Amino acid sequence: MKRKCTQITLNKFIGRVQRVKITENQQSSLKSEFVECPICSKHVLLKLINFHLDSSCDAVESAILNDSSDSSSTTFSILNTNSSILTIELQKFSNIPGLYIIRNFISIEEEEKLVKYLDEDNCNNWKLSYVNGCSFTKKWGIITDYTLRSTRPHDVSKNEFPLPSYLEFIIDRIYQIKRMGCRPLIENDFKINEGNAMSYFKSKGHVLTAHYDDRYLSGPVLINLSLVSDAVMTYSGKKGDEVRVPIPRRCVQIVAREARFNYTHEIKTEDISQERRVSVVLRQVGAKN
Image (cartoon, rainbow, N blue to C red; front, side, top):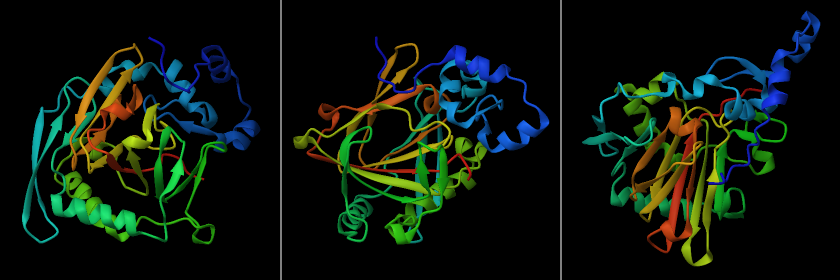
């Protein structure tokens, strides 16, 4: 099966780059251009990090990404917004190592309020986007430049926005399960500094095409909150295997390890059950200026 992936494999070129001997002066001048691979810890040219993960990173297939030692589910009791105790269950998706799902992460009332906030945030309006498919989007926090392979803080003067206050209860809930022992968040010391929302309308043919969120700049963990509609997300592995994952509304997906680095993800238009689906994705960007 032909992979829907834009990250081109350049095995020979990468191998040649990694074998080049660098003088002390050259090493100093190029230091900022090399980064540590999030999987194998080798130093790789920043602009080639995704090529490296596709071609020459031996550790991608190794036990470092295997979460077989985790139990199939873990229950957390956290403090709700009204100071009551909320019990949630983190379930490991057995067919894809590193993929976790928390059902009913927020209540129906919280979902309604959150979608209303998103729709009525007139300072940061929905904008039509054709990145990884077609949908209406808005973003917050750290700005990522995929061409320059760099990140920078948001700039209000450029009509860029910080993470909004109406997401604070979601972020706090995520940090609570991290403090309670959520392994993929702990092992990556996950701290949210960037996010975006997407609004899909089935009648408009909106779709999320198969892609990786950049596997260096977008960090080692993705948090995805699904709202308004149930859907099915298709994960595709490098060996051509496809796994269809049900994602009910109000659930959170935690995407880490092999699910993050070895699988693209997509949602076909026909796999959105209602007319509209809204998604909020939170990340910790993986590069520094």
